[in-house]
Length: 257
Image (cartoon, rainbow, N blue to C red; front, side, top):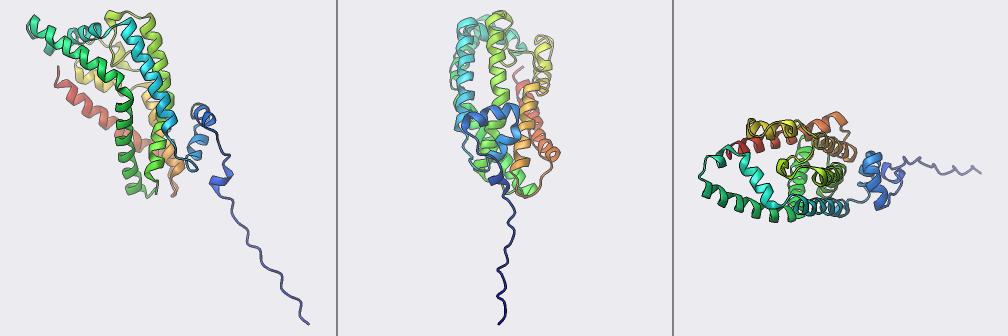
């Protein structure tokens, strides 16, 4: 009588997603600052992105309320007209009409910031989703791409809003520039009267907080790619799109003086 052969047990490799501890939403937010890889790995499990969007929106609105209270949209418009050579070339009555239009546009576009942020995040997510899937075969879903962008933007956006609120609270309203409220990039230290709009916008791309967000988004795509993707390659890809967008923005801005 032959002895029955015992069944062969196949060793199962632990899944990277199951090995990653499940994070609560507060833990995801905190780890985006302290240990971003944990947050981006958790996106594999849950690609929800609405919480960081709400946080970004809340602090952005808080900044805009402070601007309205401490600076005023009429003052912002006057500062903009004073710093624009094209506007300065117009007759005084034309400058007054332009300033009124700028004040109205600035006010409503600022309070509509959360909608613009969502729209810009959607465009960014689509572009990066297509870029990484086509060029690196990353096989990242669009939902994950959107979550990576939102969480990647979160730390820099919150720090920027807080610093801007502080700057507006204690700064000089007549020197306030809404496009560069704090000195996190070289453009803040340039004289807008003598520096071209193209150079100002181009130099704003060297923003410490902006580059932080670029790095975080790159890390997020590297950690969510099914095919191995080097961190440097992912960050470099995101940076290439970032600087291209800034360059195009600088070109359009220079047309307005």
